[in-house]
Length: 325
Image (tube, rainbow, N blue to C red):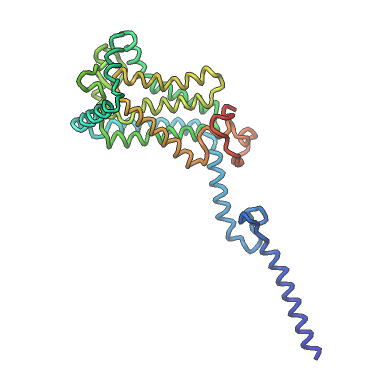
């Protein structure tokens, strides 16, 4: 009778031992689904470690973009502008449909009561010094200011550069799609409007005059003068420290809007299209980085410490609050 008792006792000890081992290998799970508040599982759950580590690294990269490299950024800007010019000038120049689209937009604006382009164009054209200055503004600042803001963003706000540059790149890419699928004749090609570059013999613009032969004249929708100037203006407004500089940032796209209408290079609707492209650019960058472009730290702490580790996750800062530092 003693032997069965011994066997029963051994079985009980084995069951207890199995329960103790199971309790070590299967720790309790809190309500959030993690194991003891960590992403690393105990022995026996190693198979889950790899995917979680990969997701953690991707998430860290999204939260903290890598430090921009000067040579790479210069090459990227040069290549992007080359592609932009190539595609913009290579799209089909369908004159008939481009003029038809211009007529549609002009009629739409007249129905909405906002068709003021012709009055502005004719009125400002009578002030020679003003319209000549606007011609040069249209031809030069579009590129100068955008490049200057990119350089300033790279040097003074490197932690925000990658996201900001992504916004600009996406905005431009969407504009190229618009150029291809919606050729549009600018107002200066319509009756009653004045081509101010030709009328005042100014230089520098590819929109009309001598430069017209090397540029697509029907790439007016959307207006990248508005898309790029609005990007510059918002970047300066949110990140500059001095109030007067921030004010200039907001005024820059307003001045640009006045210029593109006075010189008869764009309709109001072209400006709306450019602003819409910029809005999509911000949303796409938000999707990529999980944070709005200007919400990243000015210089991540890991960069200041000389560490190659990614920036730890931080609670997003409300737009406009504490962004300049």
